[in-house]
Length: 521
Ligand code: DUC
Ligand code: ZN
Ligand code: ZN
Image (cartoon, rainbow, N blue to C red):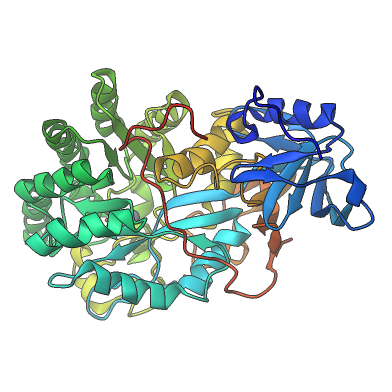
C-alpha cells in the first residue's frame, strides 16, 4: 500500500481538483481519510474495494466542478477519480450533478408553540421531507422553556428525535431564560459537549431577552467559543404597532406584515450587531428579509466585525402580497420577519451572490393550514397576532434555490453548494465531515437531475403540513437520489429504508468563534 508522502497536502484540505488529479495519477490506488490513512489497495480486488461508486456524474463543491466518480466505503468518501471500479453497487450518474447533501442550519421540528398549537412535523416527517429535498443534515432548535434547565430541554428533544430521523440532526439551543445557573454552569458545559451554537430572540412574549440579558449570553459565547444566532426584531415596536392595528380592527393575516415593517428588523439588527461589538463576539443574524437589514450586516462586515448573515427561501420568492389571500388564506404565509417586496427579494439575491449572507436556510417552521391546532386556530381568526408564526420549507429549500437561483443565472452552482451545504457545515462546526465532497468526508450526497421540470406541489415535499407556500412554482432541477453516509435514503420521490438512520451530531466550535489551528485539517 502506498501512503501519501510527507510533503503532500492532506486530501481533505485540498481542492476537489487536486484530490481528483492525485487519485487519477495513482490510478485510484489509495486514499487518505480526514481521520487517518486508509487502506484502499487494488491487491484486494477479489473483495469489493468499495461499497458504492457513483459514476459518470459532475461532482460540484463550493469551489470546483468536475466530471468524476465517487467511491464510498463504510459511509465515507474514499476516492475521487475517473474510471473507478470494484464496488458492490454502482449508481450511474451520467448527465447528473453530484452535490454534497444539503445542510439546513435553521429548522424547527416538534417545537412547542403555544397553547393548543401543534407543530406539523415530528422528527420522522420533518427529516423525511429533508431527505426528499436533497438535505442530509438538519439543525433544529431545542427550546428552553422559561424555568427549565437546558439539559432537561435537551433530554426532551433527544427523546423525540432518537430513532426517528431519516437524515442527521444537530441541535442549536434557544436561550429563553438566562439564569445564573444557565449562564455559569449549563451553557459552558453544553458547549464543551458539542452544542456550540445558541439562538436568542429580541421579540416574542416569553422569549425576548432584554439588552442586558443579550449581553450576558453573548459574553458566555465569547468565553466558551460558541456562536450566537439572533432573531432581530424590536419587540416593543411590534407590540405598539399590533395594538394600534387591532384598535382599528385591522386584524386579518395581512396585517401581520404591517405590524413588523422593515424598520423593526433594521433597528434590531443594528442593535444586535452593536451589542456583539461591545462584547467582541461573532454573531449570526438569522432570517434576514430585506436590504436595510442586510446593509447593517454589510456595514459591520466592512468595519471588520465578524457578523454573519442568513437568508431564507421565503425572502427570495414570496412577498407581503402573499398574505393578502381571501379570508384566512394569508395565514399560510405568516412568518417572521414577514416576506417583503420584490426589491427586498433582489437585495437578498444580491446578499447571497456577494457573500453578505453566508448561509441559506429554510427556517422550516411548519403548521398545518386547515387545522384548529395550526394556522386556523380559533384565536388566530380574531387577530393576526395569534396566528402561529412560521412556514414549512425544509423540502423545498434546495429545489427552489436551484431553479430560481442556478437555472435563472442569479447564482452559480458553486455558490449554491457553498450557501446550502459547505458554509453551514463550516459555520456550525460540522466541516469537513459534512458539507462537501472530499476524501474522508461523510458520503452525504444528493444526485440532481438538472433537466427535470415539474410544478412544485406539496406531495413532492411530503412534510407534515398540508400545504407548501411555494405551491405552483415551476421548478427545473430536482434531487433524484439522496445518500446519507453512503446509504440511499430517498430516490425518485420516495423515501427508502428505515427511519432511524439519521444520527445526532455533536459539533466542533465554529471557526468564526475560535481561532483555528492554521495547519490542521
Ligand atoms: N423565528 C424563527 O426563527 N422561525 C419561525 C418563527 C420565528 O419567529
Ligand atoms: Zn427567528
Ligand atoms: Zn426559525
